Each structure stands twice: as structure tokens, then as C-alpha cells.
Amino acid sequence: MGVRRVRRVIFLSVTLFLLVTGMTLHLSAVPDAVGAEKIRLTMGGSNTGTWIYMFCAIMVDHWKRYIPDLDITLLATGGTTANYLPMERGETDLAGATNYGDYWAMHGMYFAKNKLSNFCTLIPATKAITHVFTYVDSPIKTWKDMDGKKIHLGARASPTSIIHEEIFKVLGVKPSYIYSTPTEAIDMIKDRRVDGMAYSVGAPWSAIMDIATDRPIRFVNMTPEEQRKVTEALPYAVTFSMPAKTYSFQNEDFHTITAYQNIIVKPGLSEDLAYKLTKVAWERWDEVIKATSAAKWIKPQDVVNMYAPIHPGAAKYYKEIGIQIPERLIYKKK
Image (cartoon, rainbow, N blue to C red):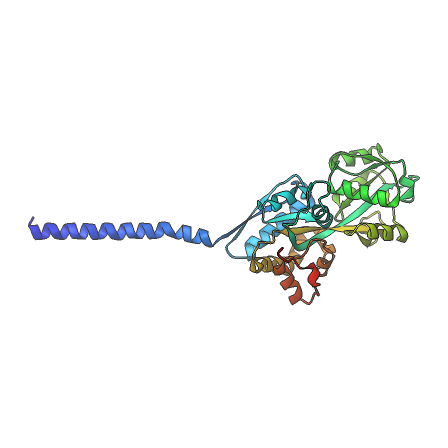
């Protein structure tokens, strides 16, 4: 082989090597570039068997489907009250919550040893309705009649148990509180080991429907005066009447109070992304209701009943659809 030919082969080989190497380097850089553009968020849910965890899972599915380049990892947690401290530390971006949990966190109560402020409201999720029920043949006719009676509140130190302890305290009623998991509570009601139950949850709650198939039960109404006392004393509480036939055994409207389950986000989330998350949620709300009927109690206007300030990006969307958001309710950087 001549010198000229050898040089030509070497030149072509080197050129081919450089082309292949360059292409490989270019291709290997593409995933990194794409990955850098993808938005990755972490969301605290709740216990996997709870309604709010299921709602969070539904919302995550919608957000990932309708917002390009968004990925959200949903975490099971110890409950909504367990979501505030990780968000305060910047470990999560979104979380399932309640407006009474927001109140307690912002005032350093119960689970929060110090006042927490690194969160704001995105959307309400459902009305957490105070269900108070007893047996059809029970002597309990009023809230005052529960004085000294064994009333189940769910799990000890859970949000629903705390909120009802607060309500009973406001009304001056002193039941004998019973605590356990919701599953055990259902069995205790069926076996009449307790006199009644108070539980804050969206409606219809499957546990009550289950109990009603085995044991005739009825709701215990609040009087207008009791409703007034509670809503004046507890800033997160709202007067509510649950329409007749929400449950098959319920022949009349049930007069009670409600609070809200909601989704909170870290204030540092970009306004554009918070806007998109809010927009997708409400534009797909009919689909959400089909997946979980408890969402039917909510409309966008309910955002003004939240306790934590609203993220500016979310507020932009609410204003666009005609909801008047007072400036005092919009989150402002400290």
C-alpha cells in the first residue's frame, strides 16, 4: 500500500471516529437537556386509605397528563398534619391539607411547636363535614345529650379528633372520648360498644353507608345557636346543611358545620406553574367528581373560605374567572 493511500485511510478512519464520537456525545447530552427542562415535584398525600390521599392521586394524574413536562411523585404520609413540617423545611412542593390544619400550623398548635408559614393555598378539595350520628333508638337527641356518653372520635390526635374536641369544648359538652382506627370504630358502632360517633369527612362517607346496612342510625343536628357559637369561636368552621338523602337513611337536611380539605403548595412555586395547576384542576373538575363524588361539594368560589393565604399564581386564575380575591388573602413574600 502506498504512503498516499495509507495517509488517506488514516484520515478517513480518524474522520469517521470523530463523527461517531461527536454524535455519541451529542446524543448522550440530549437526555440531560430534556431532563433539565422537566419539572419534578414532590407531593405529600396522607394515609393511603384516606379520601384526601385518593384525591391527591387523582389530581397528580390530571396534572401530569395535561401539563407538559411535569412529573409529580406522590408520597404516603402519616396524615395531613404530617405534611406541614416537610413543606416548612422545603422537602415537598405540594401536599394534602385541611384549613383547620392550616390554622393550627400558622398558630403553632398541636403538631406544630412553632408557627409555620412556608405554605399557601392552591385549591379546596372537599368539605370536611362534621358527621355526628347515633342509633335510631338512642336517647341522644341533641349535642347536649352527649354529655358523659361514649363518643368515638376516630384516631387519637388525628385532625378529625382534634376538631371535634374543640367543638365539644366550645359547646360546653363533655363526652367520654373513645379513640381507635376508623376501621375499629365501625365495628364498635355496629356492636354498640359506644353511644355515637363524631367524624369530619366528605360525604357520602362509605363507612357510614356500611354501618347503616347493619345498624339503623341517625344524625344529631346542631341548633342555629350552636352553629353560631362554633363558627364564631373557630375561624376555620363554616355553617352547613347537608341535603336530605345524601345518605339513604337521611330523610331531612342535616344541620351541622363544615371545614375544608385542601391542597397547599410552597410559596416558592413559580406563579406560572401554580396558575397552570389551578387551571387544570378546575377545568377538569367534572372528571374529578366522577372519580370521587365528595368533590361535588366544592366550587372555585370556596377558595375565599380558606385560612392560609392563596398562592399568587392561583389567585391569578381565580380572578380571571371572576372571583374577587381580597388582597389580604393573597400570599405576600415576607
